[in-house]
Length: 509
Image 1 (cartoon, one colour):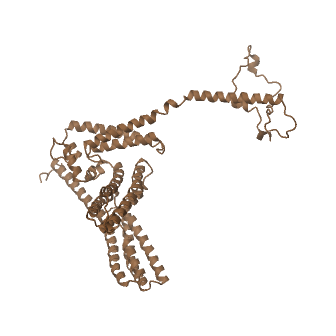
Image 2 (image 1 turned 90 degrees about the horizontal axis):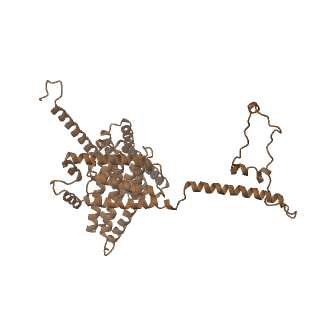
Image 3 (image 1 turned 180 degrees about the vertical axis):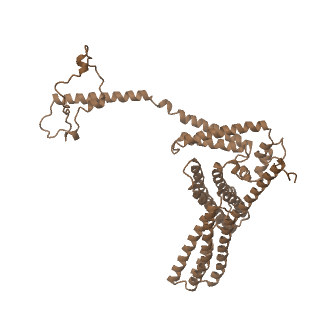
C-alpha cells in the first residue's frame, strides 16, 4: 500500500515480491511431490491385479473373477487418474499428449481384459480362450509400460527419488516392527514393497542416465545403482526369507534382529546413495531446501548426538544450523576451503578420467580418499553420512591410512626399476651383439661348407646382391672446382641396416 502512486518499487515491495515468489515456488514443489507420491504408489507393481485375475480365470472360479475384476478396474482407474494428475502439473506439451494417449488406451483396454477373463473362467480348458487371455495380457502389460515411461518423462527424477526414499524408510521401519512383533505376513508384504520400490528406483535412474553422455557423473550414478542391485538387494532378500521362514515355523525360531536391521538399513543407504549421486551435478539454487540437508539423520538417537555437538549454542540440531549461527569471518574461511576443495576435485576428476581404475591401485586409492573428503565437506553443510565430529575424526583417520597405502603403492616399484637410459643402452648392446653374431656366422658358413650328405641345410647364409651403381661416379660441378675435397668419414652403421645386407629365406624364394 505504501508503494501506491510511485513509479519505483520500494525495498519492502521487492522483499514482498521475492517472498511471494519463494512461497509460490515452495507450494508448487510440494504439490509436485504430492503428485509424484501418487505415482510412486500407483505404479509400484502394475501387474499383480492382472495376474490375480488371470489366475482366478484359469481355475474356472467365476465368483472370484468378478471380485478380482472390481479390483482390477479400480487399479486401472487409479492409473488413469494419476496420469491425468501428473499432466496437470507438467508444462511439457509433447509429454502430456503422450501420457493422455497412453491413459486413454489403458481406459479402453480395461473392460476388454475383464471380458477375456470372464470367457476364460467360463471355459478354462478352451485353447482359444487361453490364447485370447494371453493376447490381452501382453497388450495390457505393453500399454502399462508405455504409460509408465511416459509418466516418468514428465516427472522430475529429483522429486521421484525424494519420495521413494521416504517410502522405503517407512517400509524399513515397518519391516523391523513386524519382525519384533513376529508377524510374518506383514513382514513379507512390506519387504516385497521395498524390493519393488528399489527396483523401480534403479530402472528410473538408469533410464535417466541414458539421456547423458558417458562421464564421471553417469559412471558414479550407475555404480551406485549396480551396488544396490547386485549387492544390497540380494542380501536383503535372503535375510527376509530367513526371517519369514523362522517366524512361520512351529514353534517360531529366533531371528537375528540386528542382522536383519543392518540388511534393511543397507537398502535405505543404497537408495540414498543413488539420490546423492544424482544430485551431485545440481547447483545449490536448483536444489530443494529439504535436499540441502539431504536427509540429515535417520533416528532420534543420531539427532541427539548432533545436539550434543554444539553445547555452547542452544537449539542446534544440524551442522547446517550451526553454520548459520557462526560468525561471518569463520563462514568465509570455511567457504574458501570448500571452494579450494571443489577446484582440486575438478582437477582430480579430469586426471582420473584418463585412466581405467580396474587393476590400478593408485587410482582406486585416490578415488577413495576423494570420496572421504567429499563426505567431510558435506558435513560442513549439514548433509552427508557424517553426523558428528567423531565421525569426521574417524574419516580423517581413514584418509591418513589410505594416504599411507597410497605412498606404499606409489613408491614400492620405484627402487626395483632400471632407468630408461640403461635399458636403451642394453638394447643397443644386444642389437650390436646380434649383428656381430650374424656376420661371424656368415663368415663361418663360407669358410667351412657343409658336407653333401644333407640335402637341404637348415640355415643358409647368403649375402644380398649389391645394388646397381654406375662404374664411374659422375662428379658434381662444385666438387670439380673445389681445391680441397672432403675425405670419407667413418659412419656408425645402424644394426637394422647391417642385417638388411643378408637375405632371408622368404626373399630367397
